[in-house]
Length: 311
Image (tube, rainbow, N blue to C red; front, side, top):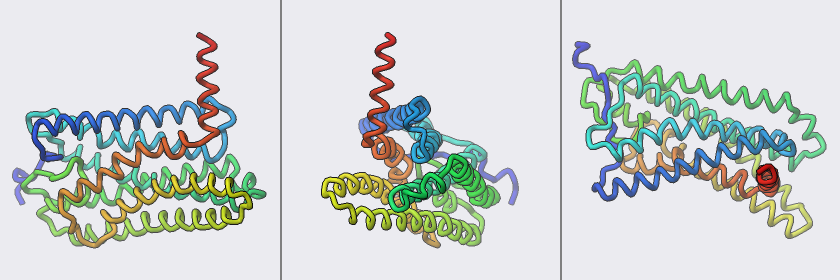
């Protein structure tokens, strides 16, 4: 194929709606984005400043918050720009592959961090006597580093495979970011081998992390059932239920998108499902993992009181 016919940039179609709905969607997603960034920044600073939160659980939470800031910033600003642009919302081929890499790398890292956090809670609830030995500072650091490094390498395979495909037109991506499925649909190459590799990778990452998280929470729930106090059981169930809700939304939508051998979802359904793991869970995580946590709220109040006393 002549190099002159190859696509050098893509047009992100985003969400099709009337101008009035475009502005409404822009305002809604802008508010969600601001809340996501602000909530996660607050978590990072509170955990860093308050010594009582210097524990493995909050260390992992700090990593998750840092990840969520970059994860949502990889996708949402470009999506917000599409609502305001009267011209085509374009992205270069290299920019598209870079966005795809960041999305896969950060998404995979989040899967590993959620699994590690579930394992941490399992040890704290089910094996409290050995918790401090098993989840030492060194172990906590190693688990976080392994999660990030594994995520970095996970993002390489899909990005390299898709970057080597031929794109000879059309160049319109019926999505709000450069996702795997719409890119495969646009390629004029044989994508069967690429689809198989991505399918296998998705199974290895998503299913294994989901099962580890699910098994950890099953053991936690079994331990909670042995708590004699009804109020204690109710309080712990409330916390675990919130965590499981976020995990179910994240993994459920991710698995429905990527753990199938062929890209057979409609474009509109694809976009709606993608909103859950790119926009909804990043804004829910600060609420579920910190703002509903008594220790975190107390630490936040202490910092605010100290700040007010200095004024």
